Every structure is written in C-alpha cells, then in structure tokens.
Image (tube, rainbow, N blue to C red; front, side, top):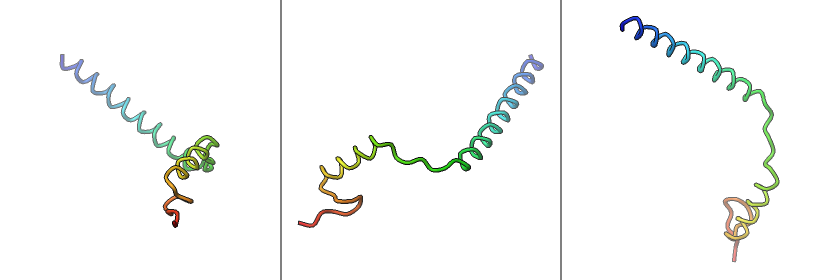
Length: 64
C-alpha cells in the first residue's frame, strides 16, 4: 500500500511538472504573437451598443 501511494505521488508530481512546463512554453509563444485585430462582428456589436447607450465613443457621453 505504501508503494502504491509513493507511485501515485510520483505520477502526480510528474504530471504537474509537465503541465507547468507546457504552460510556461505557451506563455512564451503567446508573448511572441502579434496582437490580433478585433473581429468585424465584435466591432459592429460594439458600435451598435454604443449607439443604443447614446455614447459617441467608449467612455464619452453624448452632449445634449
């Protein structure tokens, strides 16, 4: 039983270490990527939302 517990602990430790290595690699890859432009649908939805709220630009209210 003690041997099984030790083996389980080793497996968990290795899985955790592998996940951490992959995460760190992913962080490096993401930092090297160029910023993506907003998709057209998001821009359109944002513009429509701002019109409904009566805002000309984000954070600026319309003057009446």
